[in-house]
Image (cartoon, rainbow, N blue to C red; front, side, top):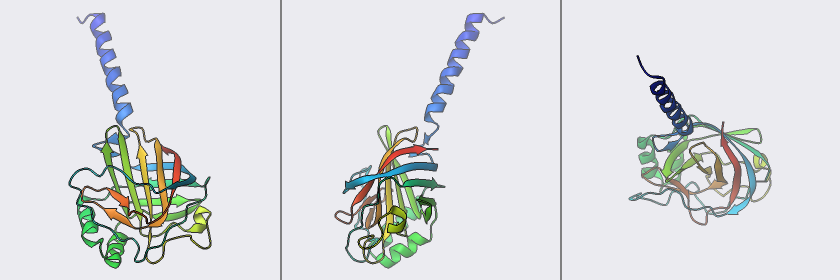
Length: 217
C-alpha cells in the first residue's frame, strides 16, 4: 500500500508539470504561437530595424516597391487584429529570396501565399508571408502583406499615405512566451528576406508606427 507522503509527492510533481505546460503553451518549437494577436497603434517609432537575423542569413535587398518613396506613419489609437493561420514554409521563404530582386516577380510570388489576415480599424488585408524566430526568451514575428495598409484604414489619408510603385504592408512583433509584447507597423515599404526566415525593412524605406499592448488571444 502506497504511503500518503508518496501520493503527496506525486501530486506536487503533476502540479509542477501542469504549470510548466501552461506557461509554455503559447510558444512551441522556437516559434511564437499562431492564432489571433491584438494591438493598438501608437505614435511614430521612426526606423525600426533589428530582429533575429541569425547567422548565415544570406540577405539580399528585397523590393516590395519598384521606386523609392516613404510610407506615412499610421494614426495612433487604431485597433489592430492579426490572425496568423500558419507560418511560411522554408520552400516559400526560399522562393521569396530567389525572386526579391525583381519587384514584379517578388509580388507575384508573394500573392500566391496566404497565412492569415490583418485588420486595421475594421479594414482587412491578407498576410502573404509570415515567419517567427526565437531570440533568447523573446520571439520575433514577421508579417508581410502584398497589399499596402491604406491611409484610410490607418487614419492617414491623402498625400504621403504609401510608398510609390508596387508596395506592401509590413508588421514586426516582439513577444514573450505568453504572446505579450510590442511591435512596429509600416503602411508600405521595401523588405529584405533572409534564408533563415527573418523579414526586415530595407533601410531608409519608410517610417514605422509603434504597436503597443500586443497580446495573444
